Image (cartoon, rainbow, N blue to C red):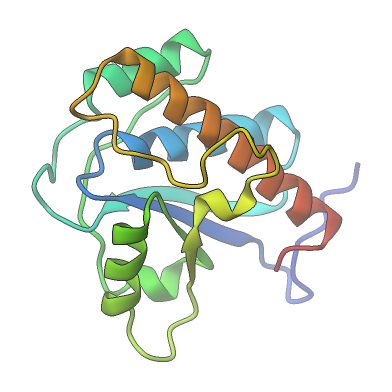
Length: 170
């Protein structure tokens, strides 16, 4: 397979994930996307993958231990330090994927007019109707919620990458 750039100017896309505190869902999404991109041999499509939160409550913290446990149990390495979204992120990233409607609305409110980021729910890439489009916050629940989030994120990441590779997403 040739490593063609995605855009005619030679660039690749950048994606970021956003939840409230950047310790559960969005760092898991970041890790899952990195893993899926590598496993599906699509490193040539994506330049940067990151995550952040709409709040700065956990800035500087690592991912929630349950996020780390769930990722490791599924063979996905996770390494992230929490941070809050910056105005510059709206120019830096082509896509910013929100985990739920509240994050989506917060991001749209914060987005500077004319910035390049396409902001949307990551669940918009749902092909399996058994999965919910909204990735509920598993923070106050048990391990089942984290595993449910992982299944959703893995499905959405692979669907996004397939559409990107097919040229149906830009």
